Each structure stands twice: as C-alpha cells, then as structure tokens.
Length: 565
Image 1: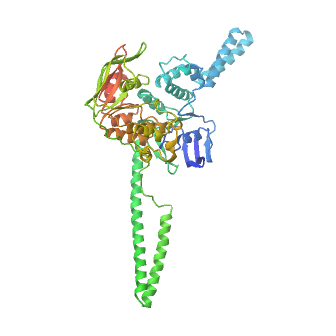
Image 2: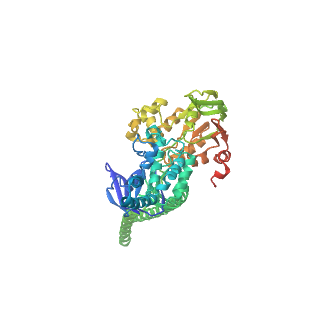
Image 3: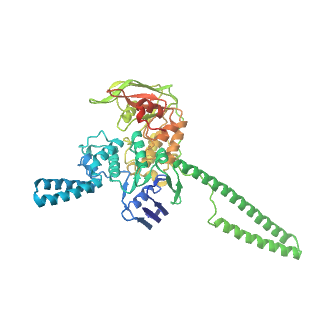
C-alpha cells in the first residue's frame, strides 16, 4: 500500500531522518516510538505527502487513500455545527445524498418519459448512496462521537463553542469517519479519557485498513499495535520489531545485552593485542640496546616490524565498521524530588466538599482525606471536574459547599495542565532562579537534568514545544520543595522514557501525591489508591476512594459492560 525507500530529511542542515525504509501492508497495526523531537511527526507528514523527503522515495499504490490526524488537527470552519463538520469529512457521500434528494424532487414534478428517466437516474443515485454507506451514516456518526466522548455534545452547537480537547477529538472522529486506507495518527490518545482510550483500541483493532500511530501510551501500544518502529535519536534511523511494545522492550533488552557482550569481547581482544604489541616492542628495544649479538639484533628488528604490523592491524580493527561503542545510558530526563520538611500525617481533608458553577454542580458530598505517603490517581471522564477539584485543594478556588482542610506544615506544589502562571516571555533559567536560590551555574546544571542545555535555557517559555513546557513545569515543581504534590495530567507531551522517570521519582517521593491522569500504565504501576468521580442516582457526581482501577470499574460499570481482561 505504502512504501518508504531510503528516505532522509534535514532541516537547517540538521538530519532528522536518515535512510529510512519500511512498508505498510493492508491490515498492519504499526506503532512509532522515540523520544520527543526525534522525527516521529515528520515521518508521518512524509507518509501523508505533506512534506517531501530530501532524499529517497515514497511510493503509494494507485487508488490508496491516506489520512492523517495531527497533534493539533484542523477541525475546519469554526462557524459550522458539529454535525456539519462531521459530514464535511465525507464529501462524496454528501454529494451523493444531495443528488438523491435532487432527483427525488425531479420525480415529484415529472410525468411520462421524463418521470421514467428521472426514476432510472434516481435508482442509480440511490445505489451509489447506499454503496457509500449513506443509509448507515447517522449510526456511524453517533458511534464515533459517543466512543470519543462527544456523544453528549449538541450536534447543532458550533465548533467554536467546543474546548480544545473536544476539537481534537472531533478531528479524530472526522478522520475515522472518512476511513482512509492508511490511517496515520499522531498522538491520538492525548485528549482521551479511559473509556475513549479503550474504545479507540477496539476501533483500531477492527479497522479495515492499515494504521500507523505515534503514541507514548504504553498500554495502547501493547493492546492496539502488532509492530513497532523505533526511531534512534542518535543515528536517526529506524529499528523494526514484530510484536507490541512489551515485545519490543524484550527484544531491545536482548539486543542491548548482545551489544554489551560483544563490546566486552572486543575490548578484551583489543587489550590482548595491545599487550602483545607492547611486549614485542619492549623485547625489541631491550635487545637492540642490550646486546651486540648480530643474530639477536636481527631477530629484534624482525619482532619490531611484527609489532608495527600488528599496530596497523589494531588500528584497522578499531576503525572498522563492526566496532561496538561503549554502552551508555541515553540522555533522558533526570528527575529526583528534593527532600522537603514533613508536615502532618493527614495532609488534606475534604469534608462534605462540593463545588458548582452557577446552577451546574461539578461535584458534591466529597468526604476524603489524603495521607502522608499516599500516591493517589484521580480518575474520571473528560470534563467531569478533576481540574476543578485539584484547584480547590490547591486553594485556587473556594468550594461552594463544605470545606477543604490542609494539615499543619503542608506545602503544596501544583502542576497545572496549561501553566497559566508562567510568563511566556520568561526563559527557563530565569524561571528556575525565581523559585530556587541558585546562581547561574547551579541553575544551568539543574536544568540540564530536564534536558535544557546550552542556549536552550534562554528560549522564552512561549516559544517552547509542549513537551519542553511540561519538562520546565516539572523542573519548577521539583525546585520548589513541596511535600504535597497535585498534578494535572503530568504525563501529557512526555515521551515514554520521561514518563517512566516521572513514575520512579514519584514512587520515591516521601510526601503525598494526587495525580489526575489517563495514562493506564502510569496508574497501575505507580498509584497506591484511586479517587474516582462517580454518580449516585440522579444527583451530582461525587468522589470516592477505590483500591485500584479494577475496583473502581467493578463499582461503577454494569457487569455486562465490563471489558474482559
């Protein structure tokens, strides 16, 4: 269907992809992984024909359609309604529908031969409309919108009234409705809640075409894909692995072990050759200077020539293409929360807490407490009020009902989704020095742990990528020295390695942590409990404590709708 042959591309003289080759076949489910900035989005844009490679060729089989969802998709005109925008994704079907309606009008006014001709034309048009799935389009639109969490949105509402996350999901729904032969998805899981994530996994599993997806969601990569393409940030080349993400990790670990073993063997060979050369040189020098025996001196010269020959052989070996470099850890984000003064055992207490915006309650009757040392994941659908609850606990808003108490000595650090408190003109170096007493050298060294090096520390916040902004917010949170951390989607825009480092750091953090997240691997591997938004009857939602995700699902999802393990 689609093939890349020795594709390379550079921007401003910097190589992004180098000699990349692979084939996309019908039914393929391919996951593309790699650290932020390694070229994943560029690869998809080349496949979609949005940009041309500097070198190499992209071949697409005749008649193959390719559709792409970008990280910030174009949802079309903001003046259109949601229903209009969905149908705009299938222009051939809309044209066929309009033709059927036009011919129906012609038939109503025609008689005799004109009616017979219009009837024949109507039959052909109706057949085309049916072939394009026109009689099922309403059901398809309903299923897509519901699956992606837009089922409750008024279809007559204009796109302009949707939130940024809703517009992103609308862009995904439009692309899925268009159903291209090759579906390219760039970070489709970023704005999806848990239910929508599971729905998308099932949709991808049953999709009739091929799917190529860039994602940092490890469970999605385990469930939805059967092949991994990993981009190496150093070589800018691809490594292909059959299987899901877990299979890739196993193969990568075995490959790393083989490289390490080969490195040890090569180093031992080099040491033996160097020792042999050194012994021969030492013998030759000692004999040349220590004896007048002509036979011995001739032998010493022969040994010296042998040493020179072996030196050349060693140099050829070292410079050969088969030499293995010393295995080193990748330059990933180094995250370690500093020790902070401990507060009381009960860090936060919510007593009959509730909040409403006007006549619209967000949550009510919440009676929970967050203990020192707890790691709690805050779960709920998009728009349910997770951010509002975190803001209330952080003291940014006063609940309209009940109260929220903070324990003695508690110092809260709040990581927001959109970083509203950071001046877009302030650079990373200045921002860190504002929250921590560090000189410029110490601040630069600190920022290096969060992948800000060289001149990048002077880039204004407003010009940073989404991933860079998230890393800087984490850097500021760590520097502040809080003993209670509130985090709103901290894994958004972080690559897999950075997510895992965040997990490990939070697992070692001695204080209390409450994190709103949809990253299922993060939840399952890191949290000690779950706070979940649930609805009791017809009343407003409340928040209850559960042991884990499965416990919450058993309590809130009817048995006939639970997804089997």
